[in-house]
Image (cartoon, rainbow over all chains, first blue to last red; front, side):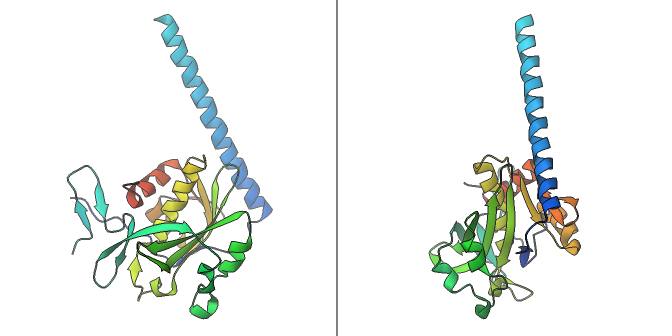
Length: 56
Length: 176
C-alpha cells in the first residue's frame, strides 16, 4: 500500500538577504564541477560506444 | 480520508498535482503559475499581511517573480515566488504563501510545493538540468531534505539536483 507523501509545510522559503560572496562562489564551483563531470562522463561513454561499434 | 487516488497506472495523482487543496473541505482546485505584474503587487503589501517586500523583488531586473493562482480566479494570489536564473542553476530567492494560506488556519495546502516544483521546471527549461539552490533556516533543513529531496550544501545553503527535481515535477506537474 502506498503511503501519503510528506507534504512541504512551510509558509516562507528563502530570504531577501543576498548570498555572501563565499556562498555564491561555493555554489558556482559546485555546479561548474558537476557540469564538467557530466561532460566527461558523456565523452567517455561516446568513446566506448565508438570503440564497440568499430570492433563489430 | 485519503488525499490521493490511484488512477490505475504506476503513479499516484494526489490532490496537489497542478492544484491546491482546501484544508477544510478537502476539495482540490486546479492552479496556474504566471508572471507577476506591477498591478498584482498593489495588494501584496505588508499592510495586507504579506511579510516580504515583493515590489523590491519585482524591481530587480535579474529576478523573475511568479504568482500561483487558482484557475479562473487570477486576481487572488495564493503564493509568490522570486527566482534568478544563474549561469548554471536557478537560485530561488523567496517563496511566500498568501497570508490566508499560512499557519494552522491556512485555507489551502500545497502552495509552496507547487512553487518549488515550478522553479525546478524552470531550471530544466533554461538548460540547468533542474538544479536549484536556496537558503534555509537551520531548523528546516531536515524538513526540506524529507519533503523536497533537497541536499544540505553547507551553512544555510540547500540544493535540489536533477533527480529530486524530476520527482517534484512529476508530482506537481504530472500532465504538463
